Amino acid sequence: MKTRVLMTSAVIGGLLAWPGQIPATAQAPQTPLSPPGFHHLHLNSLDPDAAASFYARQFSSTTKTMWGGMPALTSPNNVLVLFAKVNTAPSADPEATAFWHFGWHVTDVRKNMELYETRPEVKLAPLYTTDEGGSVLVSSDTWPGTGGVLGLNRAQIADARAKAVKPVGGAGFAYMHGPDNALVEYHGNMPAERFNHVHMHQDDPYCAQAWYRMHLSAALPQAAAAAPPRTQANCKEARGAERTWPALDKQGMFRTPAAGVIFGDVAMNWYMRQTDKPFIPTRGHVMDHVALSVSNLDAWVAKLRRENVRFLAETYRLGDTRAVMIEGPSREAIEIVEVK
Image (cartoon, rainbow, N blue to C red; front, side, top):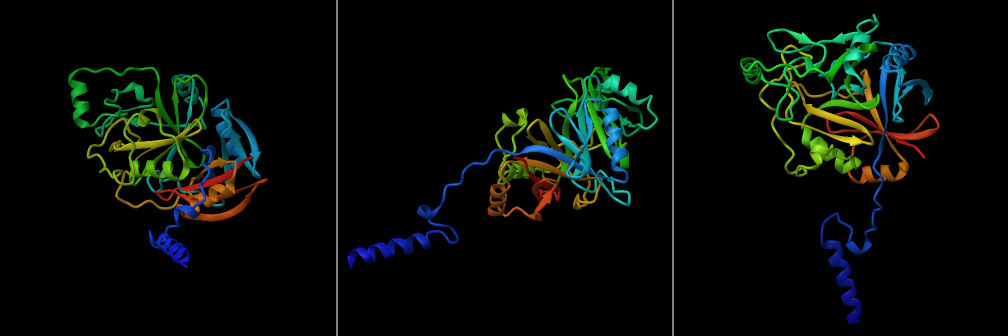
């Protein structure tokens, strides 16, 4: 009788230890899941086939293909860009959603720029060097940034002028407007041409980085990996007060704080939101969503549900595989695609 009472007390004590928590003896160990890879960027387009042809022409390492029943572009690093047909022009406002632009490594940015200048279908985007005017087509044709920031504020520009600082020339970053007014970056000089990043804005860059690490097992860029990791407890940081140049907008842009993550060899980088307007969902815009690849979709769905990640769409067929859609910290749509 005494043994039975002791056993009953132990069970009750375990159940009451922490509200909502399963007793440790009943918890099944969770097998770590392999980190996802970067699978594709999904673009909406009035003419998907023409859009795919445009990018294949500008980035010669890419090849047109079909995937999931959609026209697609494949990059040498096994990354896809998919093009979905829409009947009305998709919004390409770079400040409305978390997605800003996407980009390629190229082997000679200036050679690419010179080639693009001869092609009537390509519209190059100027980088303004100050809010007083002046622009360049490649970032390295203006004053170099400092302190790890890819630009200078007004005071730093004044100091560079006073010291007669010269542009460094050579490699840099540059932009063009693609089909459907998508914003595309090309930069180098890199060892090989490939799709390499999606650049975003986030409400809280360090919090977004912690979210991607926690829920999607994202890797950190090399520079960030050397710094103390941010958590949800210390990730909030105010937007820097100073605008910087060069910038696609004459008024300049905010570049601090900045953060990001990596999936495979594709970076997802971000600055803080540039305006005070809340982000709207990315679905339906020219940059609709990004997709990550996993080998066990069911296991990932279970993990994300345990962690209360918001699902935008339950498991559905995608070509000859399956996928789900979740929402990131600044309302960006993220597709999780099963790739066996």
